[in-house]
Image (cartoon, rainbow, N blue to C red; front, side):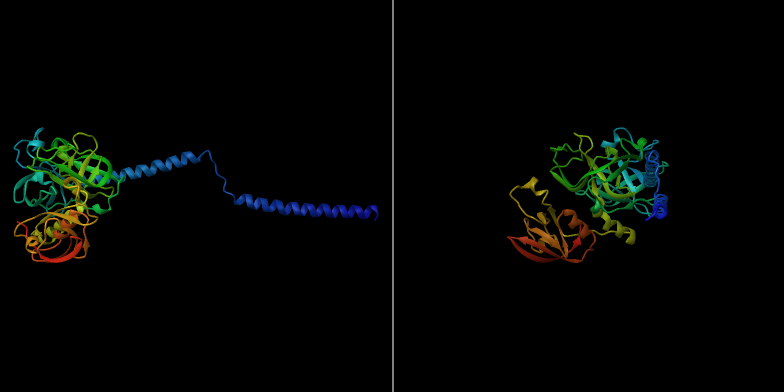
Amino acid sequence: MNKYENKKKEIRVLILCLIILLVIGYELIKMYNNIEIINYSKVPAERLSQTIEEKNNEDKTVERMLEDVTESVVGISRIREKGNTIFTQDGVSQLGMGSGVIISENGYILTNEHVSGGKNTTCYVTMEDGKKYNAKVVWSDSNLDLAIIKINMRSTFYAILGDSDSVKVGESVYAIGNPIGFEFQKTVTSGIVSAVDRTIVFNEDNKNSNNTSVKSTDEEVYMSNLIQTDATINPGNSGGPLINNNGEIIGINTVKITSAEGIGFAVPINVIKPIVERLEKEGTFEEASIGIFAYDKKVIPYLDTSIKFNKGIYIAQISMDSPAYKSGLQIGDIILKIDDKDLERMCDLREYIYSKKVGDIVSVTILRNNKEIVVDIKLTKKL
């Protein structure tokens, strides 16, 4: 092979190498153009800006929600004050003054019984603009410390009832009411749900190991199935709503622990829903009764540590001449279910009975001496 041929071969190899390099270069350029170039120095600021914007939007949503709900919160008193306000500094504790929340456009208001008084009594409602209305207690239950009162007015603002059975520990809640007096009307405090299904006990001198403040009674009172919250609840907050992030009522504020900060309780809203629905549809509510009082398994240890059961509710009292008494139910029976509804809490039984009418027949499954017995009971009017 001569020099000339060697030179041609070298040229061909060089050209081939150049072609290969050009192809590789072209592919690299294509790949580089498809890569998204990120300026990492700007990422933290952009993300921070986005986070701040989202937080501001969230705050604005909460602000609007609270503004809407507070429109439905009112002041309630058992006396009519002739001055500029129905509330005085000591009136909250002495006269049962507190809060309530409008729950329908036709003037139904939900509150505590210890604020409004018992059924058929009269109380007085003060609106935000200072207008006062006579109100009648159309329903109340001292065991729940709940009452529904009625004023003669049409309301364009009323609160929506939520689902207290779906409440979870840790979720954000807001308490609204009139702490201390009406001068601090519609005060909003925030917190979280600290616990659910709490039971608290009161004795005759208005205190127990929890030092809970509530109206005096002649014997121990057990309040169960309560929602515990660390949202600040003061005496005038009684009867006001506990609401979730959607602005729905999940409970009615009722009591607080006086010996500790950040421990308050609300009655779950679901128990009273059937009554509210009947009142809105029919304008009246005749309460049916089975004639018993039963305790949850969480309450029984306060009464008798020897009583053990895994499910159901324990019958502790039976009224004479009640349908339960006439049907053969006994103290000590465990009610497992009513019709097809399993019972785990006393409020489950209350909620179901509230949905029935006087004269309805319910089928009750009880456990007695380790044997299940089914009893049919005809509900009568609660006296």
